[in-house]
Image (cartoon, rainbow, N blue to C red; front, top):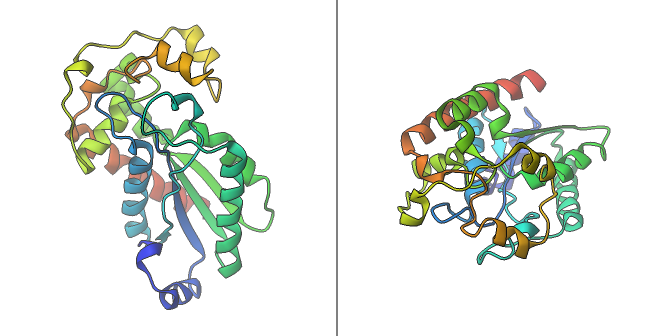
Length: 242
């Protein structure tokens, strides 16, 4: 059930019997030589739409303009400040809250969104906000690491590209056939969260945009599996929390 495909009367009728809503969050940023710029948003959106159908719950339009400053040396990336993103999140929740929504489930597809989303949960006391990234569900995490191991990496991962291959399109790219340099544990620790450094240095470190991720391992079949179990994870978590 898509909120943007509903009329206001349909939403009013919905609120008489339910007050939950799912909100996908992603990004608009490069995802390596064979990954779509909208990958993070597309993954979260697809999983949210499918879960919304099963739960009979509205899904809000995807928030895809988010912080991604570390990728600003790659053409096509659009990044907004954390302050603006947090303000946008607040405005969206306040608008929906005014109409009677009280249960907000954010399904996230972009790691740099998590700080702002977690800050959002501390700003309201009379509504319930749940934040979950699609790869957090136990069965999803198990599958992606079982299939890709260390080559899952950190950005332009084969798991997220598998999802876009299943749901959007597949791009073949000779540049991606060679594996990227592996990430050592020190790099992972130093660059966790929002510690990415200047965008120019980021592109110098990872010239094709992949961050330890062997994107070419992606397949539509694995993407279909990931979507299915992520949807099941969301549905189960939503029913447990709400």
